[in-house]
Image (cartoon, rainbow, N blue to C red; front, side):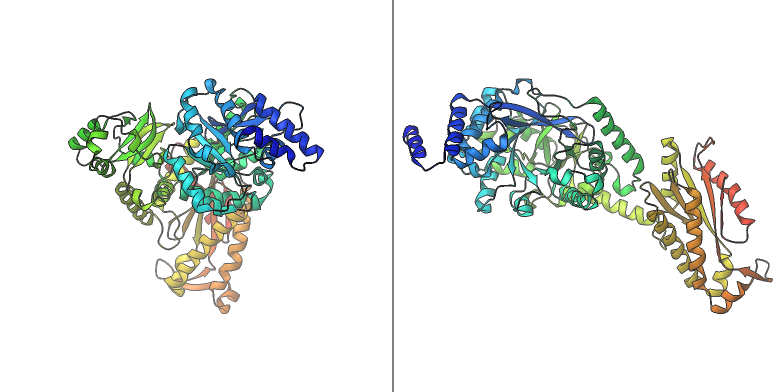
Length: 601
């Protein structure tokens, strides 16, 4: 329909004076291209670096359509969404000369225009070369607040764009009525959590639980989480503790016409909190960094020709794939079987041998960071589609290509670590055994931060075993382990380690806690529960009669608990042996007391 006729038709409708004024203002904006673009950074909550920027549009300053919600609501009402979005996108692109090539650009897209023929025909793709923008740097951000009627068709359209190299982000997750169905049907690369779920998350345990669920979901599905609307330092710190990858909000940086960095103090806070988190976390071998078992295969530039790739595979018959790079950054993966399948088509050799293989690569290959734990990588690997289940996994370090992992390596190492973990854990209590205990002690010593080590020992336990049997003795050991763990948990300590040295000896490693109160509480619980393991007669007597080491009968009191505490305060502790030596001296003091007690060095 001609534009003049269309506009006349619009004006002939029965609009109120206010609606007509809004329509006139909107048309004026479209004609004069009077929108302003501002950019808000999206920040890595792992290192404080800028991951990308979201392009945001504003109407004429001081006008009724200055606010973006009013502007786009008007465009939707008067069927001008395509015209407005195209204008905002083109205005944003004209400002990108100052954007670094490794930064992502998030472009807002209303679901209602996804199916628009003008959008489908690649209007955005045609603009990119003009502004020297790579398609792999563009992320379409789709809001969840609008309903989608036909998910099947919508998914096909999204697949069309992702096949071209675009990435998809679902905006405002948690605020709309389509909910998880939109995530399940669209399978985006990024999930932007609505600011309502972020607001005061440090004070709201329900919001924390929801955010943790999203984080676990993101690990399994390889969808990165972006928390929106971060406005306080406590919200930021809570998100870091949960493990959210990216953040956005006024605390990090407000929208601005320029591509701004974040406040250096905020970046220092992010680095410090991640350092503390890493020191607090005690990883078993199962959570070892994936980079430690990666293979250092060479990477190839994205422009490499099919002839070169075929020659490489021919000379290295055991290799099944190659990572493709832009500079030092991986952008995709080309597996050998898929490459050869393309060559086997009627014109495959003629088309691909002397041309770049970049068009054949998988743009959504699984790419993980060097420090990502093996367990998380395993979850991501098995969550892939069946046709890519056995594809290589690319490993990066500080954003640059590092190496690859095969699924076979992953399975072999996971099995080995599971066996090692079982081998180094106590079979009775399930607590870490001596090797893991020593590893933890090395860790706290190297951290150079204050800590306390608690050694737990049962007195008169051998005599109990002789009279009541090893079965009942094992029950006492399990009860002791349970009391120690539950009381440490009730004390709400985040950095705590409990191990089983062997027999009736346990150990706990703690930081900054009221040791006196904790030890007394553990003893109180133990003394109450231990009596339940004796007959009523022995309880009344307060002892049992058993033979000592020399075969002479002796009265042995009811089993008691001794806790020897070694602190790092005022000592030069160089290794776990120094801790053991200090603990031995404290234990001797405990043994002088014929009841449950604790001694602090």
